[in-house]
Figure (cartoon, rainbow, N blue to C red):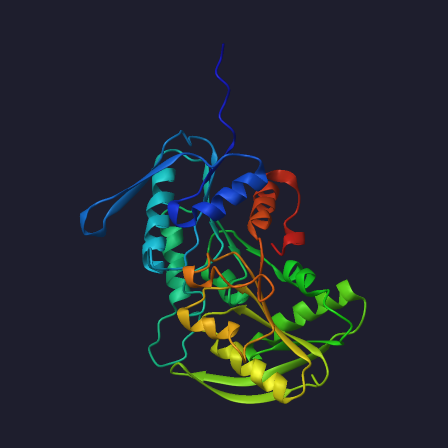
Length: 330
């Protein structure tokens, strides 16, 4: 009997993103492809597939966020080596699926002789033969698209996060951006929320400046008095920006303040978000695995929207199941 041909797709979930990658595979109805990872002295390592990828479409799911188990640089290096290995092994194509793209915030020069690190990361990813990149809610979409010379797919989480916030009592709603740079993102969220609720949603933004790591400015533009305010940002790290915005909204008479972000690369300082003075609730996706210190926070204070099914659907569509536009992909 002729052995069955291997499936066209080979989806790999390296150890750093094993849980997320396994969830993507489960949403696709397949098992993650087998691979081996080994560590050597001096921090060196290797990763190789344990099954044939010749002629197959390979997908590598790897978050590029650093944590106690490895830095962003380590995650990026492992991704690059594995992509090159898969190409050497005859993969028809290799797509890097990045729930979190490192260095996306450094997309322009803000000081003399500054690096544009997001572009350098793109050049590294391209240099090993990556055929396509699928990324979730990068900091600056135009910079992301301009940095790469290979096809890119940009996935959005706004509809999922808006659905998670669509219910919550009779108070009138307002969507707010914690800084001027995020106004377009927050407006997009506002439009999604208005469609879901079927009523107008007010808008506001905070005039914030950042220089040399120091944040200043707290002028709130817009009416939030008596409203349930949803602060929208692309990511929350230390929580400083959100806490300043929460305080400004409460001074302006907001009835309730919630924070929404696609990425939650929480540093230890972000525990302040769940102390008195923090937002009434925080809603994020699982694009970044929560640090251990956040595991015990109640589901009422911290709600997590699974994003792996969105990556699975993007892969289906890339393999011919339909257009990417409904997912935010262009």
